[in-house]
Amino acid sequence: MRIALLISIWLLSVAAIAAPGDVATLDRSTWPEKLGNPTLFDVASRAEILMFSSVLLTSESLDEPALAQRLGLRTINLESVNRVRQRMWQRLLTSYSFAQQSCDQDASFCFLVEDMPTLREQAARFQVSADSYYIKWAEPSRVFHSQYLDEQLRKAALFPQTSSEVDRFGDYERTGDGMHDRLFLLTFDSAANAVPDNTAWVTEYLRKSNMSGTFFVLGKDIQARLAEHSVSDLQATYSTQCIGVQGWEFRSHSHWQDWQ
Image 1 (tube, rainbow, N blue to C red):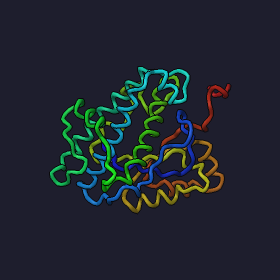
Image 2 (cartoon, rainbow, N blue to C red):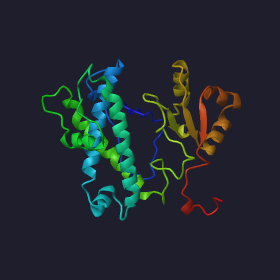
Image 3 (cartoon, rainbow, N blue to C red):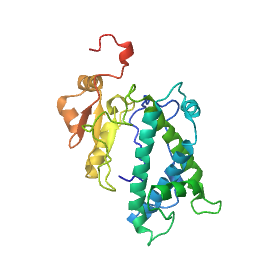
């Protein structure tokens, strides 16, 4: 699954389990072209893939103590980190292979990539010249991908002691890896406890756009809604959408003696 645009719709502020500091975000207005057709989508995809590959390759030059320091951890699960890195590289190679199919229509960010060694070689060489049409995008993109990579590697470094979406416990867990190219799955976390609550606006927008998403909610937040609104109102809000349950509340088990 190839993602040229990382769409973050914030219904609330979520503190990531394993990501200190601000969550990585990117001002998409720095990209100079509208993605109005598949060819331009491919151009943006190739650019983002190469930029992420570049920062991923740079991170591999750090030894274990240096990586732990960069991630703000005393110790790290290096085996887990390397497993996640390997999976990232495979995704990048697969995605670039899809994205370079339109290079005969627009050669921007098109380089010879046939296998993993050539992808890593291009990642090591990748840079955007000062007079490039895309120069205003380059540095913000590099900063974003560096921050995002740190978020993912930190989660990997803590796995499995601290579980997260960065890795699976078994094949029975599903990710987006098996989805077709250019197919996106929209998910929204803990929407019900946002102030102001934008859930109704988002679900109405999705219905008008003939789209659906999965809204993950907490039990106590849904109960609070039911205290103020009827069941039919709640059903109307989530009409045609999917609901996922994250549990009753966000609370660390280490400080919750009666959680079982």
